[in-house]
Image (cartoon, rainbow, N blue to C red; front, side):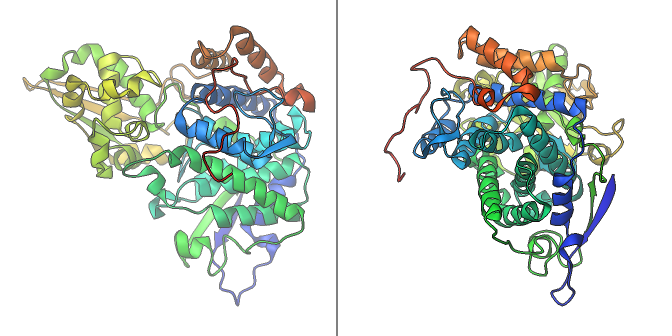
Length: 502
């Protein structure tokens, strides 16, 4: 790997484009390095993973509405939508919007956490949509996905958006644009311009994930995918973009991130070095914020020891800065303790999640968030006894670069009414690559089968699993068949409607 140094340059100090971060990213995108077999295998896993969570969410209101918007933009040779047959084609940026929302809605796909936070699987819907529109193959998709994951992960390692209350899609839009550029064999200059446009229009606040969290949490990544496609289209037509987008005197680092004196070091693969960053990412076994994964597993383990929640005086989760301030009591969001809160809010409340997991010793992407479950009196009572505190050691391990040190867990101290305590800790979720039971191909397939059972026909489940596993060999025609199809009459908003403007 090489480190690309980034700082702000005043306008009087010219920075050639060849020295800019966006150009360095574009060079990674145009490097014709062979795809590592492990990278290719993991991309297939994540295509299966995305399909499983997208189909499970397909009839939820935000997803159905995004699909209904996409259906108002039919294009005979466009891209396909989750749940609908390949005969239904829409403009690719709208396919990315609908499919990206489906993937993101349940907060149940892959993740990478470092200086900032990310869901790199959000890159796949826009890449697949463009591939279907332009007749690309499965091998082309894999090349594009490898670039997108590489750049997304390395931006997340180097540049923190969260501390400035910038939403993490600001790293997603440029990585998706670069991945599309790789897939289409575009020039370094065209990809450079597309990256800059994608960065410029993707900065938004983290209010998406604060307070009364709305369905925009699911729409935000698909918005990034949509504008990434539009940025590439614009650059392909010869249009230029704000430059230098990262280093400029009035650009994003100077005014939205660490300011005019900021300096960053972004790791990027050297020329000829394989793109393997996807192997550092991890998916979710449970439908919840990633910091909750290990704590759900730990709650299952503690459930029998704790027993009757009415005998609990308090539960304190000693954890990282991120867990405490984003999904813990450090967020100071009263909504995180509200039994009538939205699902989007509950899946960002570790207090709620830990209480339910402790009582049920199982987790379900629908049942665990149902209003009747959230409002159960004994659950509310236990939930309100749970708090979080930041522990410097867990924060250090969260940011550790050594895989043996890196951790996203917590120590839990349960104090009973009689004064006795129960203490346990877990550093990593079982499904993490370094966890007790790392997810492998059979686990991804099992997740797909579990989430689509009773939703898709058995023959359709088998068809999609077999097709997805052949992604590296798929022709353009076969790629159009990749998205699972609902049985007739079972999909909400399966046809165009007239409720909105379009």
